[in-house]
Image 1: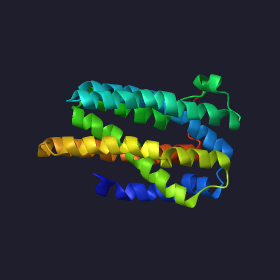
Image 2 (image 1 turned 45 degrees about the horizontal axis):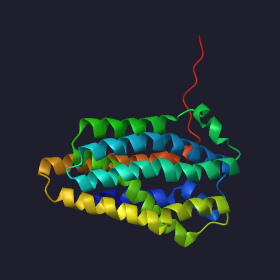
Image 3 (image 1 turned 90 degrees about the horizontal axis):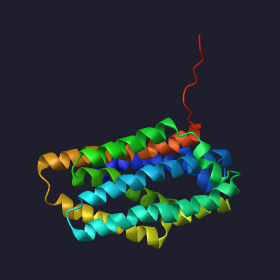
Length: 218
């Protein structure tokens, strides 16, 4: 699955949002937009992980994915609680920030897949958020950032703790994938490919400060 996602990953590393992070040239309002949307996204992602955990074939996998769902809420939203004030945003006012079209589309796809698909399909759908962020974090750590806010974000996803979490999920994916039929493997790979593209779209939406179309009465 990663081989198929390599072009998406390469495009992510070259995206102006991420090059702006490491150069320190990314406008703070774009980063603030990203952090706010990420908080909205993580609420849906935590729910998706909980559903995948409920469908897991072993007690060990259930426990691991349930812990990850809780960690998404506790750890990553705590990071947002620190970054949002530094960007001039009040965490208490987060609910008033509109969920962007891409955020809603991505979370809706995740939730539809984990509820309607098999365990393997759901696991494949949530996997790019783990795997791509770990690879991006490691790549950006080599570049660094002169902006302390951006460096803090990079350090979070390049850290050993997050790497260990991702390694657990990849080991589970390899274990589950070994027993899939060709049809099941194709379906899982298709979901992985879709959500990998959504990862690029999420950063691109922040770069463009994406908003919903406005309509007026004729």
